[in-house]
Length: 118
Image (tube, rainbow, N blue to C red):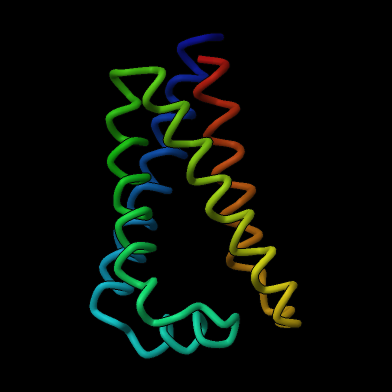
């Protein structure tokens, strides 16, 4: 059972890391859609490099967590909290187009549970 949980973490964590890497890259390059979404929830432009760095760090931690369990757990916690914050930011701004953030929150929480159980 433990090996199947590890394989599940590897798949979920790896795919989430790919999404985070793409999102970090788009954020750093100030993709129009990303910038518009951030402005809609009143995120200052000056925060974009920091948020991109957090996403990239999460991606690295999830992948490194394949070998270093505590790092994988810490990264999954951080990514989950990041996206919980994104959901809260959308709700506070009255923007109910929060499906991407909500789905990524659930995927990050799943990665956390799988890494803890493996």
